[in-house]
Image (cartoon, rainbow, N blue to C red; front, side):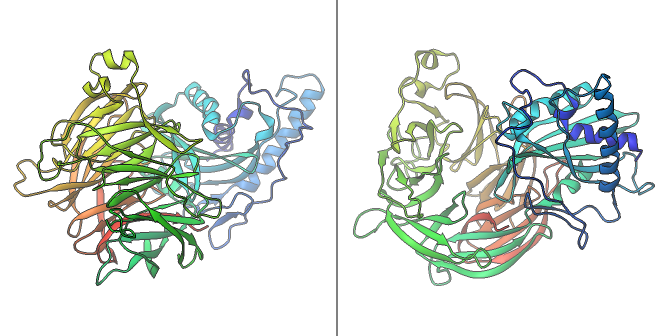
Length: 595
């Protein structure tokens, strides 16, 4: 790659240094008191891996790639000296408040490498957050990146969206630009860490090459926890070690002996794990339990029980956290209730601060919709509401969530919501989204921007797409089957998940024993069926996409096996790797980063 082109890539990676400051983002004084600690160094490459201990990440450049970090740092110092001289003599240059960025690493594909139609590169840069007012999140930083790329003729392929790097959240945006007969692909990833904006810019000749480059940036080691229904062959929660670089699972054995831990959640600190204990005889009452565990050893995944409380309803089947992490939210299937539980600093779970019974008109399926059946609950993005999928009512109920008191209450729709054309008929009597009779909503997923809600119907094996018009008023815009046309047997849909890129949606079928894959139209929210693939076992009750977004793992309850798939970054299609784990009655999979 020519040196001028390398500087162009570096300019994209340091968008604030390359662009004029805008209102609200003026540089601070060089003597700002909140200046972060001085940066350590990254590298050198050890066994082909760049380690950056200051920001706790590693990067493995592709085999044979050239490390240009020292060259570019030397050129940057020379350019900085020339610029300083120009400013001292009154010539035009950066504003006095601009500060140099720190180039942590830069790699490029070697000249003449196969497929070298684009000057591919990976650039990692850090800029002090103290230099700019108004920048508090990684998403804030994307304004200048978007503007700069558009000025340079790039087209936005994927709007900024959140991805995971271990326990940390990064914002990623994807761009492309036509260069003659070839296309340049570029991804920018940004995180805020230790007072710095850390940006990763990747340039490649195809989407596949880009995903390969990004895939080598990771927190590479995880624990995969497996929840089960207990019995003769299963005793509770099991653990696997997971190497994201290779995709290999290593069995670690029983992590905790506990009854029917059918759904699990790990808190943000990675110190505690919470499980619902699905049952109906908790200390003599018609209820299940909720158990808190401490994570004692991140290498072995071993858990120690802290305490257990009543779930305040029979057969709890789902647990999640509110956005503050101070409360756990639980759905009780047979009890038809949802409950909120305070979480103490030491990880112990408190007695319920709120319990609400779902209410509404029952669906037509006399066997499965004879009563309310809360099956899923999660907090809204702004933590003002809790969404509840109730299989018995054919509704997604929307409760008001008071995050200061830990309470739920039925919402009252606005007049505009109740009278708006196309609004859910249920909006006139309850804050909710109503599905076709007999759908049996089980789980939900949302688009990255929150504009669309995808509801999985367990009873009719469909996905219903809702547009979020405003103020939690949802309008149904599509219903699509997850089954083959004319499927003759019995099937019940189980899980639904949107890929971290926001481009694909996945569902599982128990009966057809398959994973269905859909493409998402980011503008309209509508789905297009892509393909369907065997789950590699019987009754895939749950699946999860790994934190890197490159693999999917399916838990087959009846056959007691875990099956791995590679995810094609361009098409979203699944390629089976094979069976990688054996756990009797596996029904829930949860990843936790350990580095």
